[in-house]
Image (cartoon, rainbow, N blue to C red; front, top):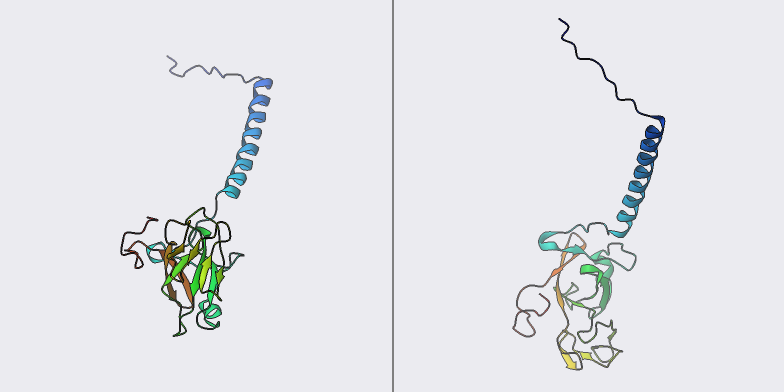
Length: 178
């Protein structure tokens, strides 16, 4: 008695083989193109330090060494790219160090960016005339809230910026941005 199974090969027609090869080629090409497009639109992960701190960068995305900012005279305010690439002012203190509080350069009225006016010693929003004190509190509206602040720490000549989650020292209340 023969216990072997009969071989019934499924024959694949030439048309089916060509359709399979064409479909596989199109899928491979489309997949690699979609991967490349996806990598373009998804920003690279930011290396973070303790508590989600990021390194302060210049307009081109290069890290700024603390010595570069500390070379300025006391009272100078340097604008860097901070959390979420938001422009953030860092202040050189009288003791030639960086202030532990940075001020985010976004008006709380409509989100405009604004310059520091060293003559008047205040931030002045050009859009609708809001004025802020050196610590970011509102001097004149229409801005309804003080400016957002962040923690600034210097470690090994790197400037680390992290989210401020404690009580706002200017108002004594929970920060409005968290």
